[in-house]
Length: 387
Image (cartoon, rainbow, N blue to C red; front, side, top):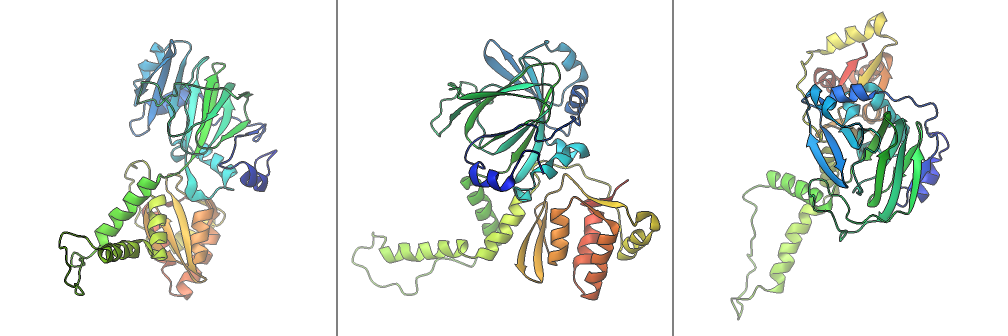
């Protein structure tokens, strides 16, 4: 748990309500990455990255991947490098998420890192999601502005979505280990103060209503039978054939409401939707474990106290349907299983081989699908032994 922090008080009084500064929330924090390492990652084709340059109060963006020589061409000040989803690639960055488990896992998006030279910034803006800004190295000044609305004026720079007006209400200088929480829609503006400035942003998923509706409707449409059609066997003669009568609208409304009233259908769709991967993932060379292979691996004395790791780039969540059954969601796929398996895989990023062995033995004694799901997890690179 974070230092100088009370999770219950935070959720009651700050979460999605107002900003909150946690001085030395991570005391003694050392950045998992250096600026040079971030630059190296920004050269990788599978990693999303951007360089933001400010000149005369104008901001421009370049999208990666970058050639190594690009960084030698940049000025000594007023630019920032952003690298997305570093928790997918760097275990030490993924470890940061463990400090924020007081928020449900399915809400967590990813960890972005921002490196800024002196004066480097991305301009005044607001986000539509919650974010924790962890100062990893060097110093950064954060200015807080107004609570923004739908009619907020933006600069003539659609790609950047920067605010035309910024009404400063507060400011802080963050040092390594300090954390600033910002709810959605609060204007903010961060500026690097030295050549070591690295900030880690823990962002959270907040799908728009339009996204939710579109995705749910697409899934329902794919599952509807073409033979299901509007019918009116109770049709009676009407005086004005051009009129759409109220009972017709009632019937259409009932048809539509039926598609949105089944809570189990909504729950299972939501679990799949919220665990869909955000980024395309490189195909891994799959193992081909059988149940016997997994038994042998787990019985190996060398593996008894060995960690099994949940792939940090995979999204896990679950629903409990009753005391004996759960639905496990992994990267948009659903797996009926036992609550014990669902809880272990969704709540823990690391667990011991003996824990898994006990689950397999229990699954076999009850003739459940848990053992098959675990084998699939190893074969699909969702789980692997710590090397």
